[in-house]
Image 1 (cartoon, rainbow, N blue to C red):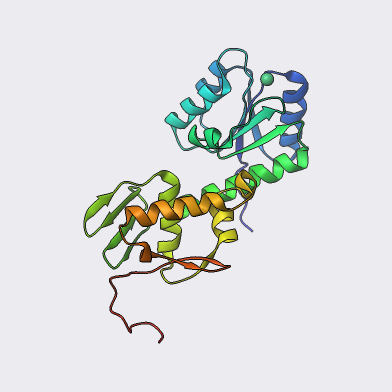
Image 2 (cartoon, helix red, strand yellow):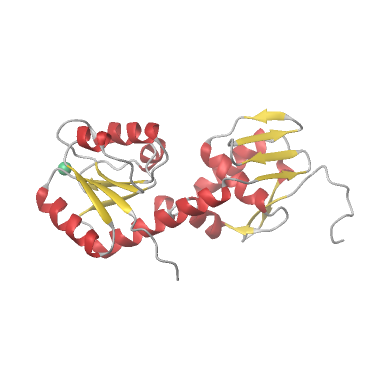
Length: 234
Ligand code: CA
């Protein structure tokens, strides 16, 4: 096995009773940890591989910090919230968080989440150099663009992710569970209604619902409705 560089973490936490043991524990797990106690320090820190961001910071609201970090780059962010905070998951997604944990959290759970987010991100990067064409539909991962018959289609980031995943293997059925696991952390939403909302919106934007076939009880597959009939199995 290849020796790998330690993953660099930025722990943004003003409360030393949490931040100190966390920093030490993550260090023992093999992470290289940088600590910030304020938003100002967090935003000035050197680039890392993942940010662990406490929402309750003394100088700037953590949500604002999350938004600004996201503007600076694609570094994955796991938000740490107090149980008393109103956790609006949709809002956390919108401001660019990749996942969240609620205080008090188990150290093991946190490490598992860090590794899961890191895995998802590196897979996203590996896939991001690719583009696919399915009939008149073109999915350009690098530019994050979708064109249909040459026309640019305006998609939300999640709609793009869903479409790009399905388009990577046209005709293959992706189960709901698989889509949720690959594009969301399952605990974001629990029920899979959110996925249906994205699929419905995608169908509308692609102006033909047949682009995304529902396989009842299983999931979804991308299919080219303009393809010659009879090309597939009868
Ligand atoms: Ca705090």
